[in-house]
Length: 252
Image (cartoon, rainbow, N blue to C red; front, side, top):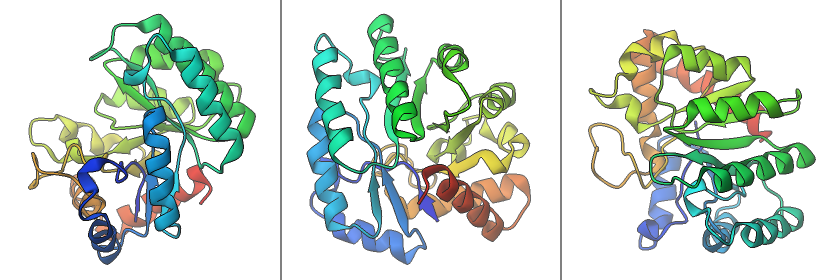
């Protein structure tokens, strides 16, 4: 299995990161993909990748919640990293209308980083909290046939899932998919599994029965179990399909 979205470079894992990676490997998670969020997270992320180079793969991007008045300088600095290092994706990027209201700056940052992805032939990992319609509108203008990627932490409708897939993008299913009150039990059975990848978003959004605890990559199997249950198929089939999707999307 592949955890396509994990922040194991964060301080929450400082004391037991090696044990966390070992638990993931023991559960059959052999790849952990690391999205970046800010300038301050780049170096810690790259240090984790260096320490676990066979398992961890880095992305580069500026999360919309870190878009501020220094946005142009931040993007310029981040672009130098993109040119100097090897990354598997541009992410985590997007629009957040839950926490942040500076839409114009977020849009500029998002479009700038989409163009990086086009330039470098990389997929994008999209954060679209309370903003799927806005993100879809922007992607519709930018999609020239070269863009691919995933809507991270997808928790929307079947209709919007199809719109996302029609644009050539995948859906990232995480811990929320296991929550009884999430409504995802009415959505997941109707998703095209050929456009689904699995993620934890750890240390956040731990799946049931660990809801409220620190999340970690080993819990990806709980998410896969829920997807298998809702689709009435074998866990092994979910593991196989989502792993193939992730390997193809991120070219790993």
